[in-house]
Image (cartoon, rainbow, N blue to C red):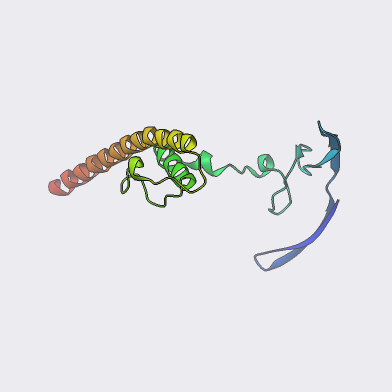
Amino acid sequence: MRLRYQLTRQGKTEAKDYRVPITWTPCHLGGNRPWFLCPCCGRRVAKLYSSTLFACRHCLRLNYRSQQANKRDRPCDRSWDLRRALGCDEGFLSLPAEYITKPKGMHWRTFERKVEQLRRVDARALGAAQAMLGTIERKVNTARAALARC
């Protein structure tokens, strides 16, 4: 595939024109699947990302949103995901898992399993929230002590 485009940065326009090779691999159930070969490193990738040059995630040093999240935020994020799957738009602090109603069309067994998962995740999320509040409280007390000395 040939990529031709113009890139404007800081008022300067630069024309880009280069080839991106495509390779094919056989699929298990027949047919073939296309892959891009990264113009920078030659890796076989499904997606190329735009920068000054189209390249793979590795070359552009891109990471996933979950890799940027704080470990304390993971239980809360998981709680929100489970709540959305159950059709609930309220957080773990405002609506306990026991009060969520079963969505229409969901099997009772699936609903009960998800609610049980949600109870466990909510307990971890509450523990993480308490730890975060403890950290904030310590920092506030440290700041008060520093202001009192002034």
